[in-house]
Length: 330
Image (cartoon, rainbow, N blue to C red; front, side, top):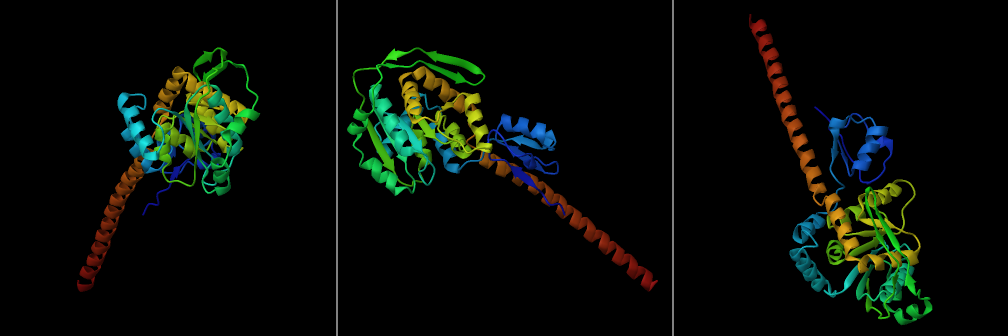
């Protein structure tokens, strides 16, 4: 009998060399970056490596099929229908801010800075903050005096310029511009723990989150631009590189810079459209199903071989037994 061993790597940009063993049946990798790491550090033969994408939950594949091209008329129509179901305005720009199931990662301060930047850029917007199980944060945001937040922030007279890099792709430059005197109307929706992250990603125009590989893969599957705010030292650093290289987001740690960049993105549709296209090119919403199907087909093949081998061994045993009986009676 054959014991089959498969490895599925669930990081996007880097991985420990122990993952890349030579005796696996198949090694499933989430990105070209990880493939390069596997080939340079590991021992897995190239013919056993599959560039599968990172496996994510089935609901993202379902939503990706329904959404299609989010920039198309049908994509916008579906996005608006999801917004209506979630109680979000269909005319607002929508920013989705996430900090994991526990709602951690300076979400309060980041929310305030994004609120201020959007308001002062004259953008009508909704900020959906996923607080997870952090009821304290949810209460703080729901009870916040947003006018007071706006007053205590010193307003710049002019926005700084923006040089946005699309990894190996062409860089897009935006010159400094005067901030509008008209304030935007910005609403903040503080959400508790939710199982509708796929729907909120469909509804959003920008995701603001830490650099978790699953979250990045989920956003890419729905062609959603991402602003990354932090990463765990080690493997998650490569996830930031993955987003920057493929040109569907950026990275900043300072909440003021995060707010400023998100506001600029939303003011310049050409930037947003480039990131949407880049995310759609790299997204693999069906990776989980494809990996399972491939493993199943390989296992089925070996099961058939094992059954054939067992039948052959049984026939050999019967033949030996029959030969012994003939000798005894002879």
